[in-house]
Structures are given as C-alpha cells and as structure tokens.
Length: 458
Ligand code: MLT
Ligand code: ZN
Image (tube, rainbow, N blue to C red; front, side, top):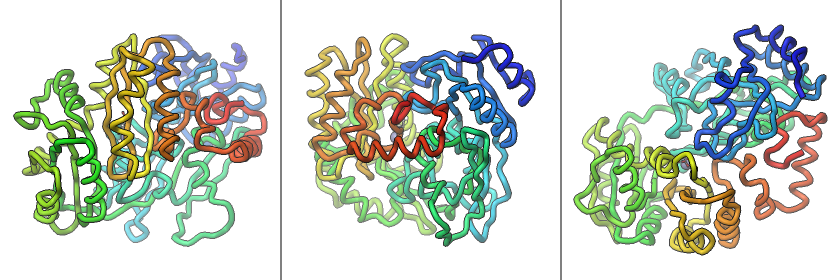
C-alpha cells in the first residue's frame, strides 16, 4: 500500500492541493451517489492534464499501487469508488472543450468535461451531443465512456460508443495512446476507442475523446400518456418506436413511481387520477412533430389521459416526473437501506411479462422490500430499483438477474457491471468470453493495477 514517500511522489507530480488525504476531503470520492457502495482510500489524486495522468500511472505501476479512475462519481454499480483501498484518480480537472468542427460535426473534449458542458458548447455551434441523461450536470465524458452510458435518447442515436470517434488514454504504465483525428472512415486496425467504451476503467484511463455531434432538432414535442395496464403501455412503446418520425425517447413509469416522486419532491400529480402505467414520449426535428405525435397517440389502444407539453417549461415539468425517479427512490431508501439498482434490458417481446413478474419475484425473497420500475421502454431498458432490502441483499439481485437471463435479457443495459454485478456476469457471458476479457485486461494492464475489483476482478 501507499506510504508517505509515495504521497510525496504524487505531490511532486500534481502539486499539494491536488493530493487529498484527509477523510473530510476524500469522503465524497469514496462513496457512490446512492450510498450503497462505500470504500476508503489513502489518497485522491487530481491531475490537471494528460502528462500528469501519465506520470501518476507510471508511479503507481512502479510502486504496485492499485488505482480507481473516477469522473463525476455518478456511477450506480460500485465501479468508480475504491472498494479495496485503491487510490482514486479523479479526472474532473481535465475539462477542456475544443473548438467545434461544424463541418465534421465533431469536437474533442477532456475526460472531465460534463455532458451538460459539452451539450452547451455544441449548442453554440448549432449542434448537439446526443448522449443525454438526468445526471448530465455531473456525469463526465470519461465516466460515460467507461460505462458506455446510454440515457434518454439511445433509441434514436445509440449509446456512448456510437458517439466516440476516437480517444486519448493512458495505459497503466504511463504510456499514452492517442487517436483523435475522427476520420469518418478509418479502418486502420483495432478500434481501441470502441473497446474502451464499457471497459469500466479496467484497460486504460481515458483522458480525452473525439465526439460525434448531431444537428439540433429545434421543434420538440413531449407528451405524458396514461395507460390502464403495464402491458398496453409496453405494447405502445414498441409501436411508437417505428411510427413517430424523430422519436427520441419513450420512457416508462408506474403510478407508484409517480406517487413516490410527488411525495418526496413535492410535485403535484400530473392527472386527477394517476393511471397504472405511463409513457413519456419525446419527438424532435426540424418540423414540429406535435400533430404527428398526437395522432399516433390518439390511435393507440389502451391510451387514457394525455398531457401534451405546451412549451419548453411545460416539457421540463413533464420530464421532471421521470428524471426525479432516481432522487426520490434514493430518498425512500434512506441511509440505512440504499436502493439496489438493477439496470437491465429485455427483448421487446418479453418486456411486459418481465415487468409484471418482477415485483412478485422480489417479494418472494425479500417480503419487506418494495420494487420500483421505470426506464427507457423505447429500447427495452427497465430500471428495477428495490428499496427496503436488509443486509447485502444478494438474494434480491440474484432473483431479478436470473429472471432477466431466463427471458434472454441483459443483466446490464447501460450502467455497467462494476463491482455490484460481477457475480452474475456469467449469466450473459460464456466462460470463453470471460477468458478473453481477462486476456484483454492482462494485455492492457499486465501489472493489474487498474480498477482491479470490477468487471472481471483480478
Ligand atoms: C435513469 O435512467 O434515470 C438512470 O439510468 C439512473 C437510474 O437508473 O436511477
Ligand atoms: Zn437509465
């Protein structure tokens, strides 16, 4: 483990104000957003540029010190906090954002830039960054690459991997790989940027990325639609994906989630009587999609109450019901029973059955727990959140993830494996695939110091 001499080495590289060692300064880096994953660290190191990252990594490798790279610490699977006393390598100071190349529709940004900052910057040039998520103000480009984050618009633009044209990254021994030209066609060997997407800090430390930007869609329509049953809502999500031009998001909620959000965040209910299931749908383009969206919604079976947003503020009001789920569920769980957040994808044909089955499956192993269901119905991604779980609650995770696998789904849609789902990765990946994963780790990081506890642990 690190000793005082090693701390001096880090201070020599990044300066004394960027090596944090006292508990009051490191506490926010060792605890995840939910409070479920808490670790400890000898030091948090905050380099200010790629050369400093390279020197820190070289020093850690020489000393055999394990490292957890960290962005905005918005991860939800315990993959970005030091569970085994690792040093935390915080990338938030690498937040430069380059000039937007309007013709190429691309921009090069530091790993520490937040998603909101990139979106804002792109907007100045009439463009947009397609990845969007509720934690946009804190989530960083590096962190979202590490998890191949999805978010709200995957059904239209794909997840983070689809936006990454190239990366700059530091290997565990301090060598730098840099491929940031972002050429439209580039078949010069392995796509290392693509490989680093979803690698959860196990292969290299991403320090910058060339990102694809998309045109802005100035005309936006948002509707909150009530359904009498989960089944009819999920069926509608499947239909709307192909039926509405420019549909970007179809988000699923239930009456209990809406009630929870209202209770914890003081929001009035959207309708006089909250329907059992709801979809929030957004379409956007150059031409106002409101009329087309309203027509498709009106022609859909099982539709009850409908609220169509009247303008940007009203859109925000409707989106708040969906985006506030994470916060409300955390408040419900409290410090003592933080939520188990099981982010999964189902084949569209099994999604309704899964959503109907999963509360009873949870109740069979944790009768006092409560299951909250919401998510990105447009791409089959449901967030199964469980509060009131006592103890480590492995039986809850096991029951839910086994059910997912039995339906042919994925145990991680967009949050990653982290430390939380390591035990269940075999449900989706064969022994041979896991062997290849380990070989890749060994090739990139032979000394085994990069995020050793996650994905396929050392
Ligand atoms: C979301 O869709 O809101 C995020 O993935 C966060 C969460 O699952 O709580
Ligand atoms: Zn999500």
